[in-house]
Image (cartoon, rainbow, N blue to C red):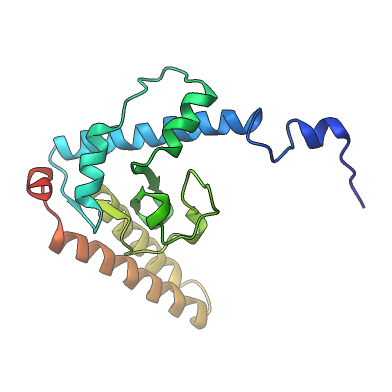
Length: 187
């Protein structure tokens, strides 16, 4: 079955132009990035340790990123926030890390002009990665779930689950050995 788009759809809601619905997405993306920065500030203030190649940059950036305090912003302000030269913090729960996204340094190869990382191409352990104790704990819990599933599936798939579980445990172990309190990471 073939679907045809009329002119209203192709120039409005379904358009690829950076206005209209896309502006609303920019607002949501900016709010999410600001919330990630606030959560990082709160977690490190509460004593969580941080690790990763971008830990220092993320901590410094989290203190300089403005909080939106739940207020709605305009699409223009959100686009400006996302397009600025500084880094923008994005929580990447499937990779158990925060991405300290800076377009010119992003190893996930986002599209030109992208204002957010390509989360489906997140590469663990790259230069933009930041991990907190909570991320490491979540990685260990995920590894335990994978190990439990490994005995319930055929051997080739079970072996793959065990290898993946070991990779996530190694990430958590690396965090445990390199993690620092915020004051140590900034110094």
